[in-house]
Image (tube, rainbow, N blue to C red; front, side, top):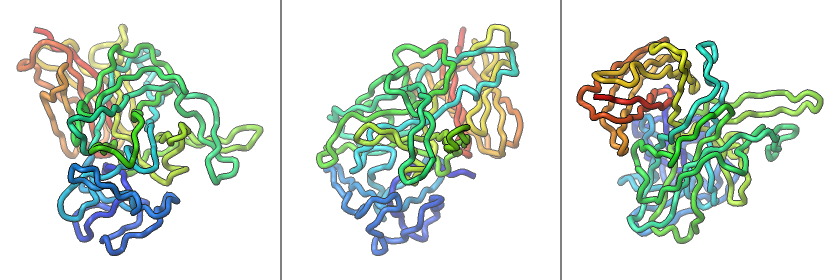
Length: 378
C-alpha cells in the first residue's frame, strides 16, 4: 500500500508504529541528527525557527508517517507544526505543481474531446495566524513543449513545465485555507474546453522566512510518486523526462522534485473534473484516469433519491468517497475497505440532501484521487 505523507525533512520518534518514508534514511533520535541533508543542503538544523505559535520549524533529512494523508511532525512528544518541503521553508520555494495528462481521458467511449475543471480538492497542513495576510493561490497551467536540463546530469532533461501564463488562478488568504483535512477550492468561473496536459498546484505569496509571523503551511504528498515517463529524443539522443511533480524555486525556475531535489511524491491536490458527453448513456460515459483509479462519473445525474458513482481500480485498495455541498461542507463520507481490482459502483443516498450541486472526491489508499460533480433535484 502506498502510504501518504507530508514530505518534510524531519526526524520522528524511533520505535513508533510509523512507516518509514521510502528512499529516506532513518534518524531515530535528536542525538543522531545529521548536519547534511540528502538533497545537498548543508546544516539543515540551521533551519530551526520558532514562529511564536508554539511551533518550531526544522528542515532535516528524514520523515515518517502514520498512514494515508497524515501529517508528520518533528517534535518528539507533542505534535507541533513543521516546515514542509512542499510549502514554506528556508529555501524559499514558492510554487508546487502536479501534472494531469489529457491522455487520461478514455476515448474508446463516445467521444468527448474536452473536459472542464471547477476547482480542486487539496490537503494542506500547518499552523496559521488568524490575522495572517499571506495568500496561497490555487493555479492551473498549460504545459509547455520545451526541454530543461536537469542539474548534474548529462543529456537528461525535464520535458514540459508550467507555462509562464496561467489558465486560472484563485487566491485564498491563509486563514481561509482548510488545514489538516481535505478542503475544496473553487475557481470563480469553471475552466472549460480543456484538451491539453494540465498542471494543477499552488503558489505562495512572498514571505520572509525569518519573520513568518506564525504561518507555516505545506501540502501533503504521497510517499511514492507514480513516476515519470522517458522518451529518447531522435537526432540528439537526449533523454526527456515527463515528470509528475515540480517545485518552483525562489528565482522562479521549475525543478523536478524527484530528479533534481531527491524528493518524490504526488501532491494531494486533485482537480474537480466535469466530464460531459451528450451521446453517452447514463451508466457508461467517458472516463478519466488518475494512475490506478478510473472514474466513469455518476448516474443518474441529476439525482432525486440517489446516484451511483462508478469507478475502476487497477490494484486492490481501500476507497473513501467524500461528498461536499456548495458551501464547502462535507455532508457524506462513504468508506469501502478491501475493494478488489475491477469496476465498482457505490450508491449515494440523496433523498436527505437539499437540492443543488455537490462535488465528490474518490480517494484510494494507494494515493490516487479523482473528483467530479453531481446535482440533486427535488
